[in-house]
Length: 250
Length: 243
Image (cartoon, rainbow over all chains, first blue to last red; front, side):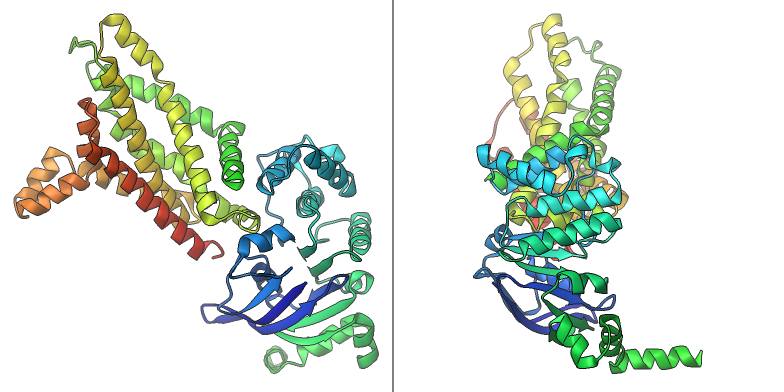
């Protein structure tokens, strides 16, 4: 459902994404792992057609991100890293705005809202202004907006960040339940999350793919836990070694 | 079309869900009335709205950029631009949706000056056609200033910078057509160039409409001005949305 071919994107002298290629099929939950500044968010933003790549391309549900960005956005649900929301709106009016944009009307709108509101546990704050919500609730409102049109592809940038353990468990359960019929990409720093929900992991650093395997296969290959695998793979890069040597000297 | 309507609806509602609209309307209505009466509305003893319309360019130079400055700067600063442009909305739909909502809001502000029309009608027998064309000219001028403000709002994340740049450019568009400015330019520039500056100024076309004559050239001027700045806004936004 997602085919990424040699994506590259730079911001001035910094190369955020450096020629990454991968495919994700229906039923897969792909976890994008990597240290801060690895290029995970940039890659996701390119797939969500928010950013244009310098070179390379990708197709989502058969639509090219460069040629048909609106169709791509129609077929995906994207949750951005900091969950940007219109704070002056109430939760209800915000979700209705998303329905307006996605042309979900009448009975279908009611059904979609009735499905997604309890799913994300935001019934109690439906009439509340978004500005007054806690970080966890804001993230759940963002998640509800992402799931509203029941997209085939979900791109979730750190979906459990800011949630309490119960909410994290709930979101992971939700992702697990949806995973059979959808193609899901999540980025996270929480390695236990990868083990709990991802059927496949891609480890990126400095914009490049360093590993592409299942969490179990990675652990088996390196004979250690996933956090140790993560450190081994990302710290063994020459740039990071230089940094470590400099730190030792000081 | 639906995405345009959704953006338009949300934007228009957002004015009234915050104190912004009410503060703007109170200040605008107070100063438009105050300046009219201060400039001798009664002493000229004429039942027309010339003293009202003549103050609007100066008022708009400050008031319209204050409406426009938040349009894109706020979206960029708050990160909601990422939400907006990962929904199935094109840049032109978003830019037009926001612009038309803000323009309609300014139209509402102008419409709320209706007590002035009632006052003039009560005191004498004004030429209603002249008043209608005066309002049309004011609405078009507000659109022109708004398009400029929209562009500068897309340029910077900082609303203050957007506001200052918009005020400066709007002031240039107003003052370039003033007789004192044109006389100054006539001292060292060829007449063709002075005439070009005069025709580029918003004042020339606004004053032309205030005479009650709807000229094709004046309407075209405002349409081109608005389209040009809005188009530039779309380009800048596409370029800078993620920066």
